[in-house]
Every structure is written in C-alpha cells, then in structure tokens.
Length: 454
Image (cartoon, rainbow, N blue to C red; front, side, top):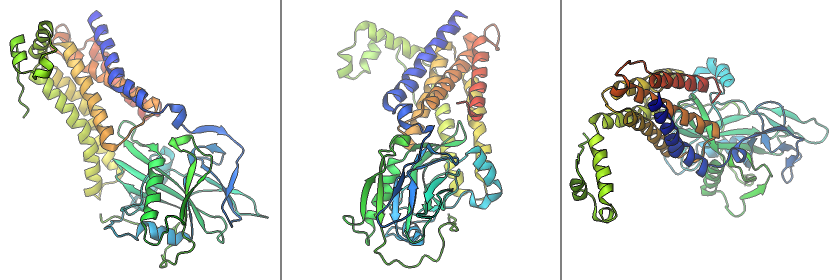
C-alpha cells in the first residue's frame, strides 16, 4: 500500500508538471475566455445610414447573456456577400460538404447535445461551405415604429475537418432589407475525442482571416472598404472588442441566384535501443558538451537508468502514441474518404479505441514489465506527450481549466493501470489496489466527461 501511494503521488506530480503546469502557465485564465452568464441590459449598435440595430453578442437562449461576440459586419447584399466568400477567388477552392446536411433527421438531437460548438474559420484561399451548429440567437431592432426581437442565424459557413480543427461562421441578416448588412460571429474550434464535442479555441484568428480574405479580393479597396470599429464586446473567447467592417455596397457583383438562408452545399469531396551498463560507457556515448558537466555519480545514475530500460517501455510508449494520435488522424481520414459514414458512425467506430483500447493495451504491455514505478511513469508520460502532440497538430494554445483537470486525471488513471499491471504488482494478485484504483478512475472520469461533468 505504501508503495502504491508513492506511485500515485509521483503520477500526480508528473501530470501537473507535464499537463497542468504548462496549461495553466501559458493559457489565459478561465475568467479571460469564459462567457459571461450574467444577464445584462442590451446596448444596441447601429451602422452609418442604417435604421436597424443589433446587440453585440449572441446568446444560446433568448436572454441577454454575453456569450458569443459578433466580430465581423459586412455591408452589402447578402447573396453577393455569400457568393464572394464561397465562390469568388483566384485559388482552386473546393466546396465543403455540409456534414449534417444529409442527416437532417438527427439535427434536433445534435442541437440538444450541442454536438457542434462555436469555432473559427477563414475565408482566404479556402471556400466556405454550409455548416450546421448549435443555434445562437441575435437580438435585432428593425428601426422606428417596430419592435426589437430575437432571431436565429440566417446561415452558417464552415471550413476544415469535423474531427480535426475547423472554422465556423454564423451569419445574421439585417431585419431591415434597405440597410443591407450581415453581422457575423466567427471562431475556431477543435473536436475533443474525450468529450465527443467541439471546443471553441477563440475568435481573433477567424476574424483576422476573414478580414484578410476580403482585403485580398481585387474589387475591395483596403483603405476605403475595410476598417475596424469598437463594439466593447471583449472578454469571451479572447475577443478584443473590435469588429471588422467591410463595405461592399459600392460594388457590382454577379447575382448569386441563391438566398443566404436557403443555401446548402456538398463537398466532392524499428526502433533500436542502445543500452549502457556502466559509467564509462555512458561517457563514451555522451556528447562532450554534456559530458564535461557530468560527475561520476551522474554517470552511474544514468547507467542505472539504462539498465532499467526494457523493450516493453518503448513498445508501451509508441503504442499509446499511435492509438491516441491514430484516432485523430483516423477520424479525419474517414471524414474525407468515407462519405457514406455519418459523424455518429465515425465516433462510434473510433471512440472505443480511446475508452477501451488504450487502457487494455496499456495493461497487456505493462504486464511484461518488471517495475511498477517505471511502468506507471512511462504510460502516464506517453499519454501526456500524446495529448500535447495532438494539441500541437491542431494549433490549440489555450484550454479551459476543467479540460486541464480532466486530462490530468486520465494521465494519472492510465499510470495507475500500468503500475498495477507490472510484474511486481501482480505477485500476490492481479487485482491489486493500483489496478482497481486506475480502472475506477478511468471509468469515472470518462463517464463524467461524457455526461458533462468535466
């Protein structure tokens, strides 16, 4: 029991050092990115030569909550705006398949589960395709002698991979057709395989990319037609409170022939291990710049670590990395190449690799290892490395505190499973305290995550 406690404390320290610590140091605090749930009195915004007004945030319900900041406003005909973003470009763009468009029967379920959360996307060099996501409401006022009201989005655009990272735009047309403006909320998001939901990364990157897209258009005067105005909606999702305004009212564009709200699109679319056993061998294979700073005690410690290394450690490391990252890459590959599969089918196929495959493989491989602590550290460290590599591939640079804590717990749980499976832990019984604690923690954390507690 004492040894198990030592290993558990070591795993907690390791998870904080390699998962919690860096996340909390380099990510913005929860207060700086979390939406404000407090109801407020709306302060409306109007544009020049426009009678209609809009509130500067979106809300998941018909209440004045400062959730999703509007960050792009485009003046002009809505169909022309959509055509300009989706079809006019010097690049070879491909239309993005509306992943949910073929499965409208599931739309209500998806909305109830909030399966699609907000995310940033970009318009430069990439064609935007229709998207479906959780409904967000805008509060608009048509003008004199008319009442303000809540409205849902006129349309949504997306680009990117459902099971990777993608951009997302929600569009809201002016309630007064004479005013000719479309307000947009754009953000980036990634698919979280532990929660089976999308998580918002921020809004600034998407706003900048949309802005650059319009600036790159040959018919846009970057000095006259593109500017920024301060809406004072900073806070949620890394918004700085400034919105991009693009004026297309002076342009003559080809007719789109398709309404914004009705528009839908579809896509065509052996590691060798060198082992040293004494301090002299360590010195022979250590670069001079490092060797000059090593004492004999340091060399003996390194040699002892080499002696503890087993082939199973390397196998365990690459197995966890391959399974975790393989789920991410596999989801993207199936999305792109297996058009007959719905998002739910892909999730049902790959999620068991996370929930069952990783702990089972860890248990089986760790069972060939001798030392409990070594097995626990390798398994936990491998999962921590896999998590960081995954976020690195997606370009995620900030995480909510609840996500950080969840990742720390799964790292500890997998380490306990590995430590409990090692030979020295199973001398008396295969069902030892470390193994049971690790399995219970893994089940509770993943179950709680799916139920929304993490």
